[in-house]
Image (cartoon, rainbow, N blue to C red; front, side, top):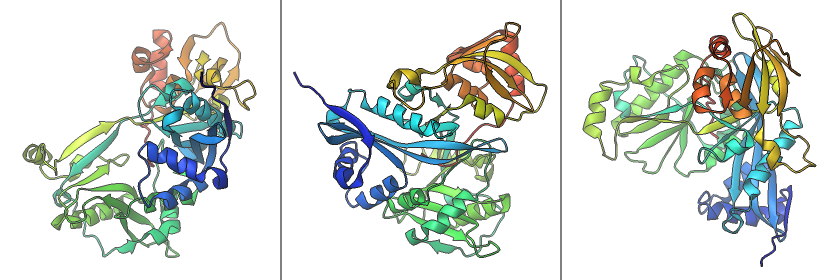
Length: 414
């Protein structure tokens, strides 16, 4: 019988660097010559590890930031990485260590946590709910139809990471948009691939980088290329970046872009259906794909409601909230989740208070389902069909009305 001695603790770069490198290599995240970028990324994060017999075999990274809720910026924690070595699988380390990382950030007045999921279901056990679909458009850049002539841009190199990060932070943001505060996250992302590059414009009043695009490829000559991110402050800058991408079409045959919030890229593509048909199943296939690969959860219900200002007549209801993360946390965890009974008001001045009002209708929900409803991922009536949320028909209809808000998009991959 094998007895596994485990311990959860803070990451120690001197002791754990090689072990965490091995974890990433075993799960296919780390290739040759990428160790420096990985160390830069970890240095930007708050890192926890789980030991087996004194050596790190599981690691979880979180990085602070903000998420936009309508016009409010809320404190946000991004679970940036969860990695488990080959020998530590099916021991419960990943779930419990992630729960502890979330609990520690929640204890420091973070209101929301988010992450990118490897598969739907695993992080639901920690109260996370699936986010909106992100549309990825792949098309011939020469088919872009914007009537704008792009000026000559400035080359951006990996040495420009501070300027690029500030440009990302200052970009135009809409509902659901996230910022990750640590500049070294951008530095690591820019350095991850040897063939990535950027183009941009320094139009700020003091020469700041106002709008730019960062691209990557495996085959430089003809692509495909993909846009890692775009950052712009207004619609004119967006159109100039699209014109700049169009200029690559003389040589590049395919480019993939995550559709920006509020934009329907098909409006800017010439003969999209014809191009999809004639390129079908080719290396340069024009297509549109949709993926829901990010998740979020509320960490502080009262704090989130205080930041919620909705149009329309306020509604009040009882909320029976179930938070499964408490089953993943030890008794000495600094935060135990947000299960409980609340009286919630949604409206111009929203609030949540512990308790129950017998005269009000009752909504029963997991924290993941409630988060999805509150963010505007899906309406209450739809979540009542597919997720862990239920209530009287009239209450669901009223929730659908009051939460008519934009679809959330993080606009920052994690």
